[in-house]
Length: 184
Image (tube, rainbow, N blue to C red; front, side, top):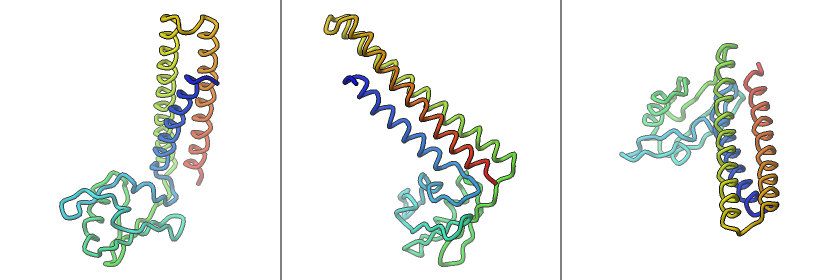
């Protein structure tokens, strides 16, 4: 591999990591603490991530338990969860907050798969943009006379090979997540 295909590959790897992060937030019937990752709680006037205010546990497959270290933040955490787009009704017992994850209906699972497909398509577009940028860099080098036409063809071939591998990885990750979402 060349320097340009290595650089493109590293950037494409970051795209796939971002895709996996997006998939982790897709709510399936299983309790997943990552659905709370982007949720901010107003803690003394400062938007603070839940994971900095509380321990998040998964005692059973369809239940998340949020235990704040500072019990005075319990109401704020509950309000942040209710105001979010999670679609989960928190249950506050004064010590912790329970988040039951009901099994999604067939229709909702299909919507979630469509959402996953959108994330995957965005990742593929990002990967193709990285390929275009890498190809542009190499073409510029050829125009400036720093590499030969044969080197240009070799570089483009290497970049395309890396792109194809990453597109296949996106498809594989999507297939796995879709199967997980559709599982009853």
